[in-house]
Image (cartoon, rainbow, N blue to C red; front, side, top):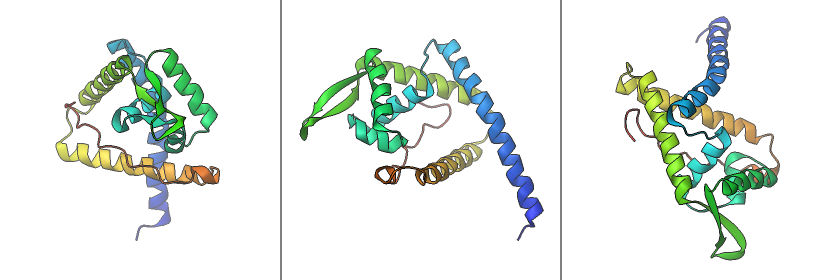
Amino acid sequence: MDSGQELDHRLIKIEHELSVFGRRAERFRMAIADDSGTVLDRSAYLLLSHIHEHGAVRLTTLGTVFALDISTVSRQVAALATAGLVERTTDPSDRRATLVKLSTRGQQRYLATRSARVEKINILVRTWGQEELSVFGALLGRLNVAIAEHDRSYLPPQHNEPCPAPATPPTAGTD
């Protein structure tokens, strides 16, 4: 077993790299916007991504998946609707409920943004081998799950449901 000092050194390295990554992530998003002409903030991109992967969805489901209050989700979806990226429809299984689905414009905008992101990632990792890409994707996914599970402990009981597994992202260089 490793000594505590070695473990601390590795954790300090991870903490530092996550801090640097957090700072660079916004620059990465803006570079993609500059290159592609598509500007979607993080929350819009994530909502559109989920709707793209899962189809029409209730606001309450989005709140659960993203661990957000229904009023926050409602505000974000309203902004997407105003921008013409999503449409609201009546849920056929419960006419009192509303489903949110991608509009044609939303589908195009999401796919263009995703394509620009994948293209930029492909440039950044062009010297990585397939195994490195797979391992990095798996470890990053594992970290995201751990963060989501940790965050859920701070949520009200109605949000303490397991987060659905994300769809497998496209391999760098493919779409």
